[in-house]
Length: 405
Image (cartoon, rainbow, N blue to C red):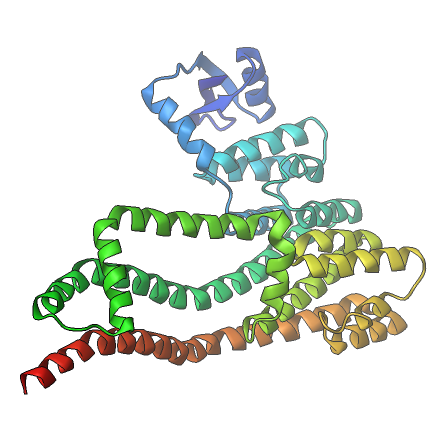
């Protein structure tokens, strides 16, 4: 139940707010455990606006950006000497995201009950990944939770930055192609029927390309609503197909073999593999557990299979680098060579970090040039479409002029 309360802090400051609790007594105990003296507690009744808020909260989530801020702020406060419980309470008051507020309340309650932070984080698998939880647990076990949280924030920031750059490079062609489709449909629906009527009045014999355009124009003109509904439906179907597990294997196969996108996808998965394993090893996680967590981090099913093989091989005592060397079509030769050097010198995590930094820089450079490569291709596609349309609609007019002569 939701309760509103008034409480007094140790320095005499009056605080007001709302909290979830099973009853008034539980809320009073919660306030006392935080160092507040309860003055009044009353149940907050639902009204129209609170119901709207509940519906809105269903769609709220904790973004990667908020997770980055959370880890860095929490790390900074722990490093400054604040207790974990106090640091979580401060963050709870600062955040405006209702979903994150509830999570922080749950974490505070767990810490107050004697549980660890990693235990509380594991309750929210949709928000905090296995990598997040495992690195936190390793930090707790090593007594360096502040450092572990800072490393988590840096890893999240780097991964988020790479993803944003790749998406940003693909947004431009996506917007252009979408605009082409919409403008094309409107041209067919409103311009082509007018020209078709003129051709009919003049009794011109239309070439096959013009007849195709006229047929499409009549169809779009008579079924404009159906056309746009169909386009939206197809877009949603494509979106859900890309997310469907049964077709993921085929989509991942195609992506890895696309001319430019395929190389970026390979380098992205290589960088993610190297950075994740490196971070987990530095945090004190065992190699087999690190590989298992990394298997969840990479998105491509073929990379998941290689990491599964690597885990099995390591458990059997086979050197780690051999699995990557046997899969040079996915991981570059540099990956297996650097891992071998790392195993021989006892600096595996350092070597993996160097691999991650190298390929992350490569991805940044390629995404910068991607727009430059895509622009001329788009111009050719647009030019070809406009040229075909123009020739198909102008050629009958030349026939009319020839007949007049």
